[in-house]
Image 1 (cartoon, rainbow, N blue to C red):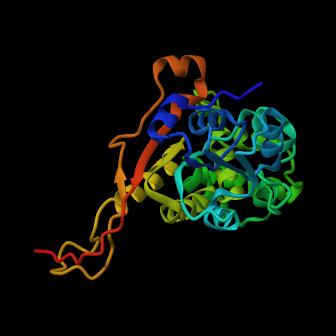
Image 2: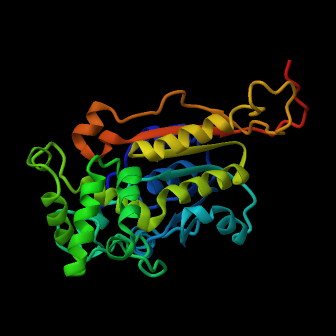
Length: 318
């Protein structure tokens, strides 16, 4: 069964795909977007499908087998090396969907779900990553846990939860998902324990981001995407929380303007030249119809930019 992709029509339309296009799907997942991309670029096109999770690549190969498809088990943050290794200088379009697929949530052994008992793992690539969520919870200093819960999960009870974790781990290693959920629930007020969202939601998000270095990988990927996009090529990023969306928004803004010197500088000394044109002035969200049929699309935001030819002329401020 094919996982239902988020914003499938909007994403494919925004990428401006044609027969013969060379495209990167940096987050293959269950292959929903990839299948739609192949419909647009074949015959003659090529899809480089990347996923850090080896199971995603293997499962997709079972669904579809085409010589125009290259499956790569790697992190999208290594985009430039991946493409160089394939002898590809530039591509016509790049898509990444920063959500994780439901197979990872449903598999309790992966440790992503706070509703299923499993090992505190949360690694996208258990074969290559060493640090698990259990390592973070049991070994990081209490103050560092506060920072992670607050910065990556925007958790208002970050300090009290980190304190409870620090006390509990002295008695016994925290190794299971529901074990951590119990600690979190006991460390916050009854009012928030019975709130609209599960009390462990933000902490689990924060741990997942830390374990997989998601925000740093996103920044690295964005820098490399500019290098690898052909002139006129499109980049589309689908994010699911404000931390990711803010990074993408600021990156697009920075690279869609020339000089970034302080306003009081009489002359440009930075040498910065715009390399992107923003296609989506505001992020594209899911329609009401899509949200009804695919609730996970509710928080999705897609931003799209187009690669420009770099300008070489000098810019002087007036």
